[in-house]
Amino acid sequence: MASPYSLIPFAEEYLADLMGWINSEVECRQWGAPEFRYPFDRHSFSTDSRWRELPSFAVLDAQGAPLAFGQFYRRLHCCHLGRLIVAPHARGRGVGQQLIRKLAVQARDALHLELCSLFVLKNNLAAKALYEKMGFEVCSYPEEMEWLDMCHYMVAPMHKLLVMEK
Image (cartoon, rainbow, N blue to C red; front, side, top):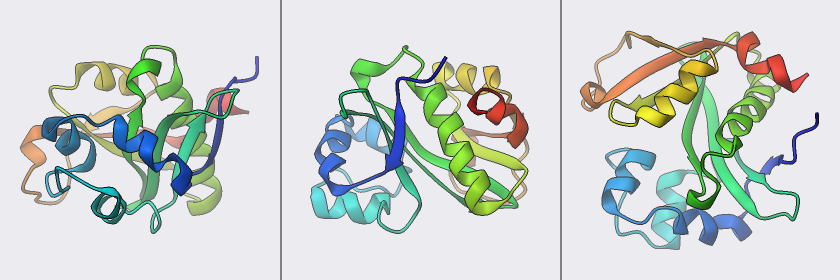
């Protein structure tokens, strides 16, 4: 069955929606990393999210409304998925899984890598469960990072993420 969601390059017209999904400093740090500025405005949010610099995408519903956002880039020989978020009203409907699968297709085509990676906060049990269901496993991160004690580093073979996108 075809997905009711489409993945498109992120555009400024979706910025207000994305900003509206983050309603506290805690949520901002969870999503954007410890150095992400809060409170934010359009300029600081655009700068800190780097949506114009990194491959950044939105998942849209059938009516064209944004439901999710994510980015990817090369990190330690992996396609690293970052700043993944699903609109609060769309959570629990499979949008996150579609976001990851569709980003993996884009990343495979752009980066030609065999592994995907991501970070998830240790207290974000719902996200960690989704990632494990999709084939991600917790791994040791090979570099020192100041905030790594708060996160799991997870890696999945690209082929596991692409199973349902063929």
